[in-house]
Amino acid sequence: MTITQLHYVLAIAEHRNFTVAAEHCFVTQPTLSMQIQKLEEELDILIFDRNKKPLQLTEVGEKIVAQSKSIIFESNRMSDIVHQFKGFMGGEFRLGIIPTVMPTLLPMFLKTFNIKHPKINLLIEELTTEELIEKLKNGHLDAAIAATPLKDIKIKELPLYNEPFVGYISENHKLYEKSTLVVEDLDPDNLLLLQDGHCFRESVLNLCNFNSSRKEKFEIKSGSFETLIKLCNEGFGMTLLPYLHTLNLHAHEKNKLREFAEPKPAREISLIFHQKHLKMHIIEALHSTILSVVRGAISFHDVKIIAPKQSKKRI
Image (cartoon, rainbow, N blue to C red; front, side, top):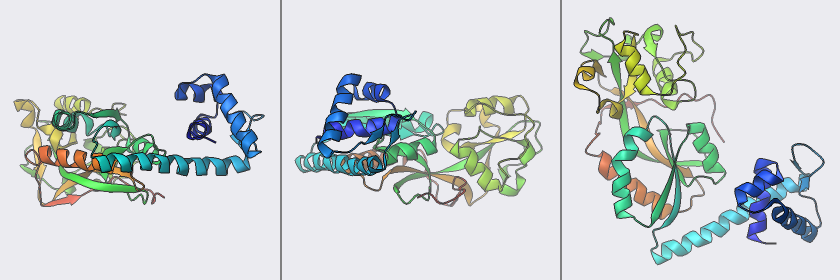
């Protein structure tokens, strides 16, 4: 039995197809099949039921997959311990970021982090919160940046900053003349939101206590704040923006911004990772770098954190 064979088992269990699993493992399909057959012969069991489409795990195969995950994790932990002992800060580090944070935060810290840690190869992927959590749990990401709290017992959170919500109001809107907003000002019939799947949308729904199944005048299929801003510029109501998205607006657009009265509604942005964390020295370095660059750009104390809307506690 080898670690490589166990990697192949997990790949097949994930993709339910020998050919696709082989492609993801960068080996030929006959090579992968031969290794799985050798493992099954060594253990004198069948891990996969090849008669079912798609491929299914046998009862004992389910247990083999669970144990394989633990063995591979502990193997990776051993390498991690050695790297930390030697003070080595390098290698690949897979980082996921939610779409409403990626365009504002990433340019702020990426160059600084690369200069401080040139041997670390950051592999960055833009994903929704649900996708981030899934990939953290199955080991396809080392860490992620998302809105918190997530209330997931398997996910650890290191807060980075609190980002207030800011109103962006068209000139013909009834709230345009107000200098400061309160939550009670928000009207669900005149509030433009991002499409389903974005945690910022869920936070706004939570803030306003809206029903996410409400009927809107038209359906937005864009995940872009830029689209919402343009619609407001054309007179279609108002929207809410995260504070960092307001910094690079044009002067005439900044005239449409309205802050909330204190305590300002805000979202908490955190660096998140699996409870059985690996590469903690890199996670801490990333956390420290981001804190150092955002401290001067965003600093709000009297805020009320609005969590992404949760249907149930994750386990």
